[in-house]
Image 1 (cartoon, rainbow, N blue to C red):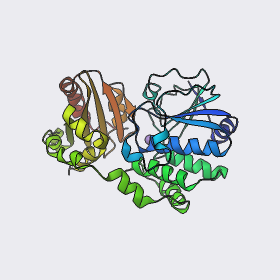
Image 2: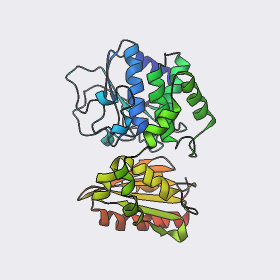
Image 3: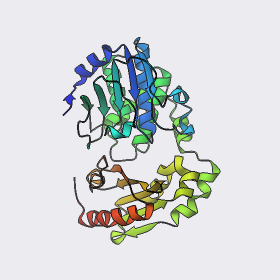
Length: 320
Ligand SMILES: [Mn+2]
């Protein structure tokens, strides 16, 4: 089990770093990218030789963030004394890279985090890792530059559905306000993360034609096949949001083609049905109301494996 870090211990750990690798997860979202960029800049401002790494493509829509295009996908040839895993609920989600043989420090907000890292700072009440970092930087009196503010605001806003989801708290809004005061441009973040190319909207009829309703209308599911992923793969959350907003729906599933025998499944819950535990039935995890898993089966086989379990959970209202 990981050594649990409190705020002071995490601060000491970061202040002791000389050369740090700041790592996000594959299929990076706004929280992952924003947190990686903000902590990398914060460490550089403190004299640390810090690099940002995500072992996957960073969607071009995030290139409005300073440094997003410079995030590396392979480990630079340096002797790192510190490796930071950001928003990473499992080690596998970091990708298959030869990580430096130093203790891994994990900063996360996933309730499903099993404590895989050597050291862990976990706050499952935070809406985003960006919220954790903002709170810490403010408490520690670390400078938050306008570019850091934009990255951290992106992290927070995208992980709480722009302050609509149930993970949004008074603290979420308070730290977001502090970021606006430090130069975050909330209108730009909303526009850049929500706008779509025409092709991603033209594929909408095909995606929504897959909509199925189960559990007496309490469960909705949509499927994105290979063609739909090619056209709209950078905008999967936009389609998921539509299926989630159907009246009467409590739980939503999204099946996404990855490879012929590899399928991603996203889970959302509007109620207290714990989709983190549901995703764990298939080796995944996440939050109570937002979770995911990877199933090493075809799209069709994944649907026939996962759907009956999800329907039963929704019917029985399995609670956290
Ligand atoms: Mn997150």
